[in-house]
Amino acid sequence: MLIVAVAVIAVIGIVALYSFTARAGDKAPAVGSAAPDFTLNNQEGKAISLHDFKGKWVVLYFYPKDMTTGCTIEAHNFQRDLAKYDAKNAVILGVSVQDEKSHQEFCAKEGLNFKLLADTKKEVSEKYDSIMNLGVAKLSARHTFLIDPSGTVRKVWTDVDVKTHSDDVLAAIDGLQK
Image 1 (cartoon, rainbow, N blue to C red):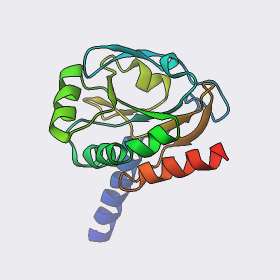
Image 2 (image 1 turned 60 degrees about the horizontal axis):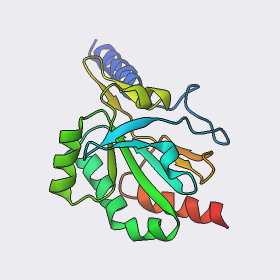
Image 3 (image 1 turned 120 degrees about the vertical axis):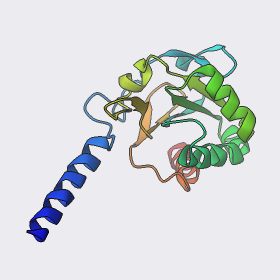
């Protein structure tokens, strides 16, 4: 009886984990397709559009929540590498469902100098199929889209290691610029 109960609990756990795991699916812009344009406010309340960055590489990264451990590590690594991104003609745009005030506080507390965009209506996260539905809340999923200077999606990450992600993105840009 105990073995059956443990097996049932294990199956329930696996199903729950799978349902909370966000994957970019059929709706996500595919590699080689045009990146969907959007306009969102940044942490300073300024409207930022994807098309503002034509001619630059764009690292469009979605993250679940300001002030959380994984999101802070990921943001710090992008911040640490900003000069490298500048040298590659690339910009970092972070997107989550928190509002401008939350992003402003996160930037101030963590010393972040790149743009964090407030997707409070979840429209952009959904457009990029980067949303986690946790039942009581929807958060942006940890996905990244590398967009080339012409506006084409060149690489998509749906399985991100926050500790190495910035290095992975820089390596991808290097490979694509050769």
